[in-house]
Image 1 (cartoon, rainbow, N blue to C red):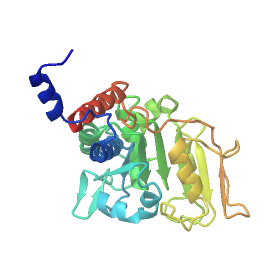
Image 2: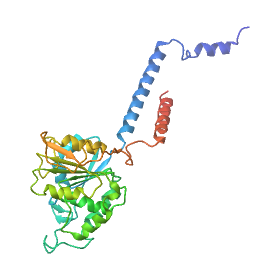
Image 3: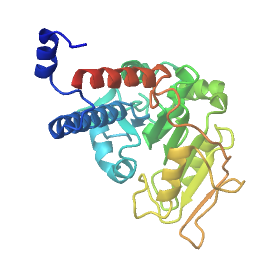
Image 4: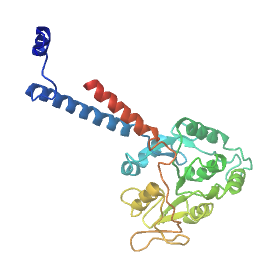
Length: 306
């Protein structure tokens, strides 16, 4: 049997099959395979970079702004860079670069206010941020911001935050109406709390901060023997404990009521060991269908390249 001439002519003019040991075909295939690999790697990096970081809402001290508070805690932000996003709010009272969460009582600090709505403008401002930029993992407050944090916790829906971090705080006793709201909501559904104080804080006494700590159920209390009226930085002996608390919600302290510094330069006590997932509910992990979506994209890429 001899095939027709037309068939023989087609076979002669056809390119060699892909499995034939043709060096040029091999190089082309390897180039395409490399391109597919690079494309897939870029897609994976893009998917990882698009995952949201857990957010911490930060409340500045009295007479500050969100921007100035951000500058003052650069050590904390640098140490947690790539792990958490810090969002800084401004108090609704005061003016210019001197903002307040709560104004002083009209009759002076000797005459406490009784209006539970005395700081509603600041509550509204925080509500707007939570609605626009939430969800949030933590609430962090310093000085007057620390005093105002429980006020906001008494106002915000349960579950708005997973943990609260309070530095150099106190109970705002000159505002009886706000304190009534705090007492009615305390202990805030057992919300885990870190309460930090410096033994050399001559603005807010350690006894005032301890009074604030009592608002929470078994808070983690850290007292720095070298600390003063400021959020601790890298040079403070308790800095690593603060980082560990933010990262995991775990207290490595022993049961107690807090105390002064030990020979190591710091002391933490009064804590309850609680483990939290900082990424829970904040979009830090992909939904179940994300892997299938990514796989589908990669398959499409492979078909396109081939």
